[in-house]
Length: 399
Image (cartoon, rainbow, N blue to C red; front, top):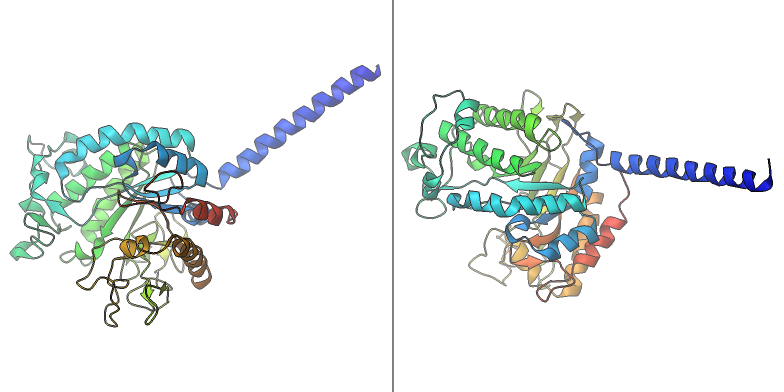
């Protein structure tokens, strides 16, 4: 065999080894985010370590948001689609959002898009027709009718018009409520959503303290996801001021979530810190048990966010007795009002503080909070946290 032939064979062997190594490397990388039907703790935490609030991502459908997704490497995009009343808009939301969800998954097939079903129902829900699949799921006789607002409410006027006239807190012990939640979850799952946030679960359970009806509804959603979701499951969470909901050792949710609860620093406008034990913060309090995927934990992994819930009557002022607002603002409005340098510094601080304080916790970094806030470095209204967020995630290796 001549030298040229030997060299040719050597090059072929090198190329073969390189391709095999590349495939193996890609396989290993994919395993960090691989799940199907169930999710391991390790994979779940890999997602939470790169989670963001991306509110209204599928409402606004902005090309700059696609650019941010690709640039930052976000893996869990929270609150991507949601409703706060205005239930008749659901068809339009899906029509606009579904093609955009496909664009997101074309950039990164591993990314989880989260939808939300909040603690509100309005009279507008009566514009929505109940499809046959919902009657079938609940094994009730099929009728040609729309959802019934009054049939979702607590008796005796409890929490009626809680949000505004004609907008109330739904009662999960009512069949109509469970049918509505299942219907919305089905619409989200069908468009590619793989996680659902259920808002303030503990104000919807006043007549369901054992959570029998919650568990029934959640089982139906999970059964539907098993057959129809992209990866045959849906990750569920809610804000849990009690630390979580556990029944006979089984956790109701796949992860927990809560506001981050920054504490105003007296005498240092408008500084804020995170503190374990402050207010009703979840740090160190996430309950454990057996997860829906079957693994046990002493404390369920959770995320905290920079939340929105409305300003107080004293915006910009320090009040010792106000342990919910930050200098009188809600969390996101406080954050937006800070100088750019402090916003970036605070995100680094918050992400690291949560990880050091509670190994089960992760800080959900804000890429978008509806139309009010964007972390973009490229748009005129962008508030320029994108590079900081990208840098934080680049320093987080697979868990």
